[in-house]
Image (cartoon, rainbow, N blue to C red; front, side, top):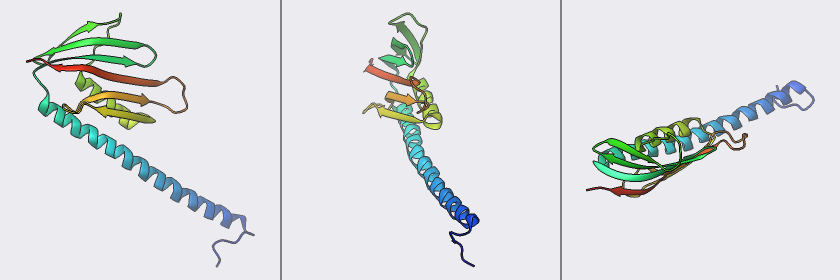
Length: 149
């Protein structure tokens, strides 16, 4: 019996179907591989952050999806105090940024992460939730990070 006989439509459909299954299988494996590396790096950096997190520090956080919101944050012994730059009730900690980045790694179409070189928290997170939707991109940016002694 010949598997591929162009005169029989069922054999053409069978061969094309098999090729599609193989291609999509490799695509899924590759997607999980790259997503898995990003997730492992995020989890590893969260553990490093928790090990090095100072008792008191300050930073500026900018966030935006449709509107840009900014806050200056002062953390003293684990308690965060916020000074809102513009009128909003946006209050986010560095631990919250890790949670949002993890959600982006598992649910978004694409994510770009940059980490602080010494304290390993995400200093920049850019998320595109859906490639097909315009203006659904969000970002989180931590700047002016200073340890208070």
